Picture 1 (cartoon, rainbow, N blue to C red):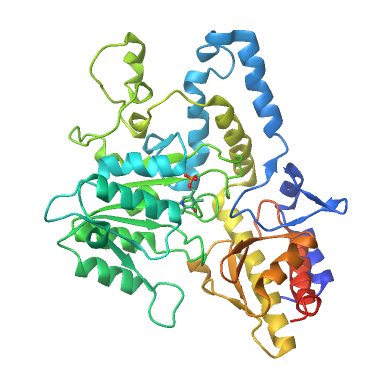
Picture 2 (picture 1 turned 135 degrees about the vertical axis):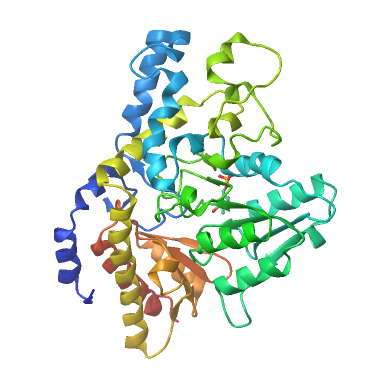
Length: 429
Ligand SMILES: *Cc1c(COP(=O)(O)O)cnc(C)c1O
């Protein structure tokens, strides 16, 4: 696509955008009475306008049916999660029975590692990306210690080459091969939170399995952002949060994927609870855990209906928008436009003031651009915030900005780039 650095071009793209009406389905924070330029969907997605109604409906059901709400009404709570599965199945590329909705992300990583990280004295290592999100690092370190190993020997981190910021697939695979006899688990993010790099999950899964390891993914920055094919890739497990690109509210409910090849394996350990019990016998309240077949069998506790209602408010929008492929197609244009505008700034200045560390290759990224500010980084970020452009800050000098196809416009990208340009003189850099 040929881009132009003019507001008219941006407005024309917005007029021609068949997804433009979805912007009106979200609530924007305000700046000087206008919608802020919100480019922070990588951290917290905006509130669907209908979220309040979805919650209210459950309060009405609670009022009307009280305890019988589990079985009565148009959306009995006992099966409420089932209404989330069709759209999640499309977003994750998984069968409905391979997905469950429960807990929050780090909790789910722990629960899944209970099942899929089974170290032996010969095979005890976990391979992950260097610079993974801190919660994942803490989760992995504590799992390793829990099994009596030392994180120093048991965690293998794949780091970028000298001079690189992102990882090369060939290096990830080479390191899996080098540790083939000792790795029990490959645990990677789908998209790295800092650089925005989208990994080749299919290649990582194949290499991990060839090495005899289990393979799991943390899809916090990938779910609702890029198309995924967990089932086809053959990943063993995955988890994600719903409050980033899935717009389901702060601390919103997470989800987990378990590949169907594991359903018949009754040797898998798990930390069980009654919500993972066989549905047809759950209320017989018998001793001895008997897991529901499918990912649902990993549930532990009673469904948090209000969180699920917020999740549904957002997932229904994804459905109406026509699914993730369509959103990604707009997202690629939108992120490409912002990237182009930033390159224009550097060109005008004859200097790379803003260096994008996210891969240029669209097959290696989603909506996020991570921008290194080479002059007055923190002041630049503060200038953007003060002028109604909301991104987020990552030490020491990175601003993450993510134009999200569901609610951001080409005009947003244009105005954000103008603010980045003005920031240079405004911060005296
Ligand atoms: C956002 C994020 C988390 C957050 O985990 P919670 O348990 O929801 O707090 C974890 N891992 C990654 C990679 C993330 O991006």
